Amino acid sequence: MILKKLRILDYIFIIIFLFLGIFLSVRGMSRHGSKVVVNAAGKEYEYQLNQNATYEVEGLLGKTVFEIKDGRCRITDSPCPNKNCVNQGWHSPLVCLPNDVIISIQDDTSAKKSKGDFDAISE
Image 1 (cartoon, rainbow, N blue to C red):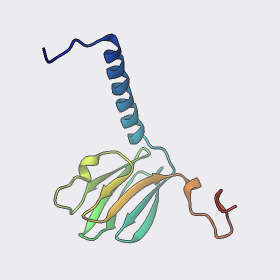
Image 2 (cartoon, one colour; image 1 turned 90 degrees about the vertical axis):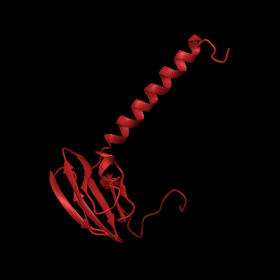
Image 3 (tube, helix red, strand yellow; image 1 turned 45 degrees about the vertical axis):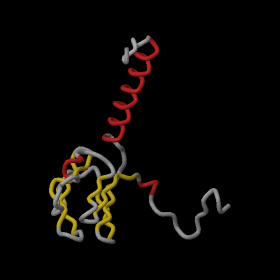
């Protein structure tokens, strides 16, 4: 007999893994922050996460269109051939490799430090 009967611990592990998968998926889709940082073809742009709007950025292949709505962000259109970035949905980070566009949600606290600041390693 190839298949063995599942035991109670097998069911517990299955339930734990399902719960963790759902939890991590929901957590990734509901990333909190205050700004949207877009890196497109070597340029960086910042947008406010609390302002619902649609924006365009120029990438290597053309314009990538993304939407900010209700504290979330998604790519709605891109010139890339396979449109995987459009199918990512409301997520962070969003990546369109062919068009060289990366969109992420960040806090203001993750802003760049001034030259006089030290981190824990350099102190």
